[in-house]
Length: 125
Image (tube, rainbow, N blue to C red; front, top):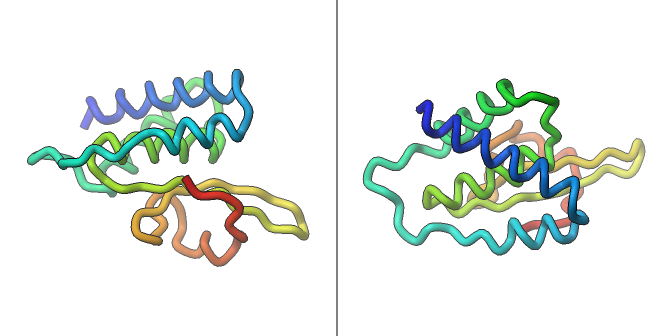
């Protein structure tokens, strides 16, 4: 489990740096290009374990982690471990709020299930 937390922390760092250097569209394109590993390792962790590792890495990160950073890292992390994850970005109009989360087969995996109902989807990758 420590290895997964360290790997997740490094992905958070990579996404943090990327968010400082590129536009949202470039970040979205980068996440979209991360392909899902075609075969899951025999001892691959479950989706829940991988998401918990990202949560632990967020708690250990040296500054607050934004939902876009967390979701981009989670999507990449899940794909690297053979899970077909999608990062989703949504918004509400009044009051304006935006949010990012991760889904696998149209099921939210790193946030509350009600997130789908609270936001209108703007982008998937």
